[in-house]
Every structure is written in C-alpha cells, then in structure tokens.
Amino acid sequence: MVHGWVLRWLLNILAIVLTAALLPGFEVTVWGAIVGSIFLGVVNAIIRPVLLLLTLPINVLSLGLFTFVVNGFMFYLTNVTVKGFEITSFWWAILTAVVLSLVSFVISFVVD
Image (cartoon, rainbow, N blue to C red; front, top):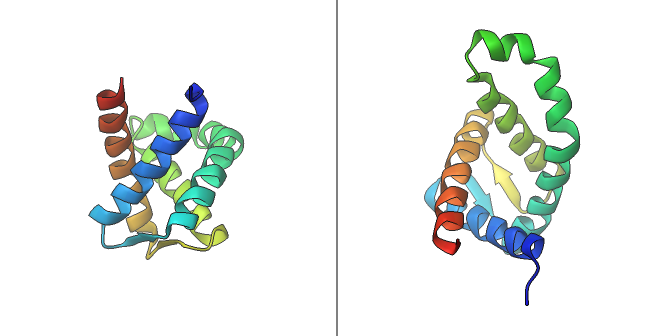
C-alpha cells in the first residue's frame, strides 16, 4: 500500500510532466521532474510563506493576484537550481504555476 504523501509526490511528478507537455516554454526531463518536485516542495514549505508574509500589502492591494507572481518566482527559483527543469522566462514560470495547479487539481479529483 502506498502512503498518502508518496502518492501525492508521484502525482505531482506526473502533473509536472503533463504541464511540460502542454506548455512550450517549460521543458522537463524525468529526472528534472523528480528532483524539481522535491525542491519545489521544500521551497514552497520554507521560502513561500516568508515571501507571502513580506508581500502581504501588495497581495492585499491586488486582491490576492500577486500570489501568482510569488508562485511563479518559486518555479523560477526551481528553474535556476535544478538541471532538467527549464523555464524560458519569468512569465512562463507564472503560467507554468497556474497550469500546474489546474493539472494537479484535475489529477487529484480523478484519483480521489
């Protein structure tokens, strides 16, 4: 029996690969998807809350839309750090974050 966090991690890797197949500005290898999902999880757990707190005034003024920029920054940071996880620009990073969240939602809806 696969534990819940292992299943979520595997589904996250699948979502990254599917997102890369959908977007021309985002390319990923299988190894890049594996390492990228681990790195993205750590970055989202440690750095993202701090950034959201620091950008809270901008986020409130933009009615939460600045969160997309923070999420895009997390992907861009992963792009800079992980080989095989290639995003062509910051705007593609923001779009990748949006599409990945939609793909992850659909996959988790189908699996549940």
